Length: 240
Ligand SMILES: Nc1ncnc2c1ncn2[C@@H]1O[C@H](COP(=O)(O)OP(=O)(O)OP(=O)(O)O)[C@@H](O)[C@H]1O
Ligand SMILES: [Mg+2]
Image 1 (tube, rainbow, N blue to C red):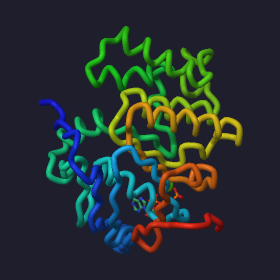
Image 2 (cartoon, rainbow, N blue to C red):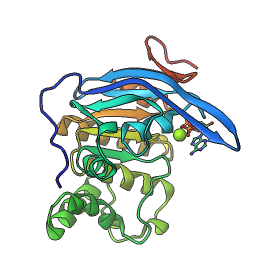
Image 3 (cartoon, rainbow, N blue to C red):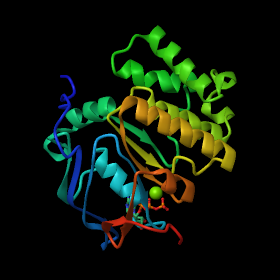
């Protein structure tokens, strides 16, 4: 079975409607999302702000179909994720979504270049081509000398950069990033932000970037805030 095709011109590109997600633990329930709704237009780079524990990672997991909501829908180019079975969701995610995890999630037994190439291979690109493209991606980010290092031999910032490259290499329609510059110093963070923006624009990708960084928020086309389980549009100053 192939991943469902994404129609090129449907609108809105990403529609999130009345998403609710609660966690129940030891008979105590926590309502993390209570009807979050928003839309993303194709090619938009949108920042998502919110305090620690407000549900940002929870929301990204629902947008990628890794997790399913208790109520509400996520629709990407007319395809509602909740209507796909688990295998279809996996294939859809693999092809159309790039996810930069808060904790990187690199495969520990694969080198930097293999971690990136794997995404291409899973999407049907030959092994040799995948490795060449992955190598080029590493070089574009100044990580050419780290090509054959395992993640355990990379610094946190280097792992984060590899994770960013891995999320972008197959030019997905939607990039979801959980604090993509959180482990980087100001200079590396600025460089990766530029690389991220250039890659997103070149691929025409839409992106939702969870961030605590003023710089990331200021560079976004729009800023959304997650507070008390709902998403609101934020405008004006970014002081907090
Ligand atoms: N799998 C889970 N089981 C139970 N509770 C969870 C689970 N995942 C998250 N939570 C709870 O849901 C709330 C939101 O968590 P989430 O990780 O989405 O927050 P966040 O906004 O990403 O925070 P941070 O900025 O610290 O990364 C937290 O109170 C957390 O304890
Ligand atoms: Mg989080």
